[in-house]
Image (tube, rainbow, N blue to C red; front, side, top):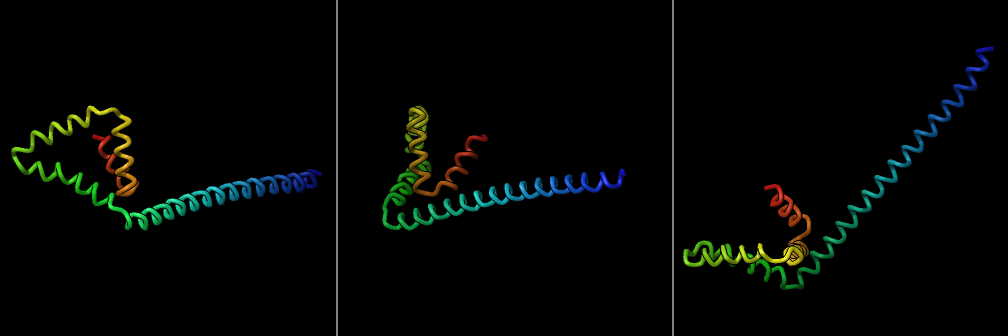
Amino acid sequence: MLQTLIGPVASILGTWVEGRVAKSKAKAEAEATVIIKSAESVADWERVMAQNSGQSWKDEWLTVLFSIPLIACFHPDAVAYVERGFEALEGMPSWYQYTLSVIVAASFGVRSTIGIMNSRGKK
């Protein structure tokens, strides 16, 4: 009698476990699909931005603009001006600083700029 009761209970338990495994597998597959689609979207956006930047002068402009303080630091008479300029920028409203960061990020690439900004925040 106990034997006849164990068989159906084991069958029900086995079916329940199989259902849980299938549900977990489906959830993992759905999450993997979302991650893949997200990565594809980022790659597509970066490809379009790279294509569009070939028709723009803003990258060159920002490169020259960011090079001015770098070059000026090697001229002793200009060092004080560079230092005061950065002090003035540091005193600007945070919205202005963030906007400047976004402009640079959009021009040079979001990933590399975010990496630079994150490493700056860790100091």
